[in-house]
Image: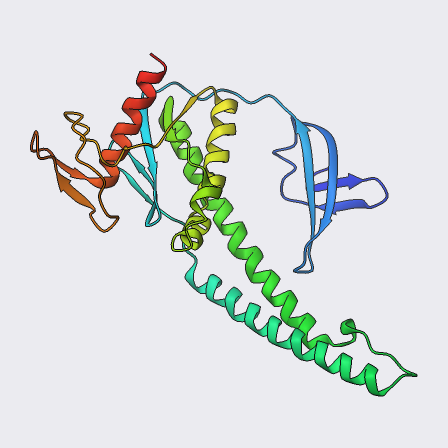
Length: 264
């Protein structure tokens, strides 16, 4: 490893901006992969020492949602990742790709049916391949920006709080609800949960998971169970103690209470 360069067996030197981060790491293995967008990526597995973050004595419950990705028990709401233009471009090129590939498939079948001596292949048609590459590039940009957003958000949470309590949501089961599946996938609940988990392990913080049962139905002030409420109801008042609640913040407070009770 030299300044701004990495030397790989059989490949030679490649330029990178990440040599400073690798100075105190032992590189165990590497993987070179080819992306459908036409780019090559180098993934490194390294061995290094991670320094624990400073303790803050702060605890938080987090409720995940569709409109806002994360709502905390102390009243903060973190918006879901949203890249409208890039997503629209990815969908636009997905449609072009599907249409052009279908047209190319039909053309190949017709040509091969009428010309037995000279056969054509689907890959001979460049029009749909250009659409495939454009589609893949926009999809990659959306995925990269979403991952970057989640890294920054989870790092901020792990830095700010010593104890984080979240719901143990079964994302696959929730995605069976066709009305919410796309929104849940775009919000990236599973990726958010995974990042929180390993960052808490790395930096000496505690992550607690609790069952999500009734967290949006119970008053966090008096524990009165007021029954299920449609998703359209975002605020409500407890009929027993009169406390007024933001639905999501109340759920986050209940999640925190559950987690602290579970660990004693």
